[in-house]
Image (cartoon, rainbow, N blue to C red):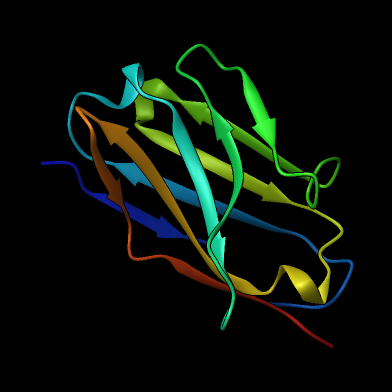
Length: 115
């Protein structure tokens, strides 16, 4: 059983920064690609970024140049550094992974960008 727990969300002004964390339980963390997703009210889920087990990263166009995903396999942790935040970044953010064709995700952490 894989459990994912996100933290770090909150209220931030436009242009500000937040760093989200996701801690995973279990021993598979180091061999899976980790993903960050977000979902705003009334909108479809969007994949924000992912990082492979070897550290290759990929970002949605909407966040490229502003967000950075990183991981520490020894700590079973993946982070999402979010800079230059915009009101349209407001959403529930959660991390996820797929293992043996099963998708796991955490409960999420809310990010609100507003003045």
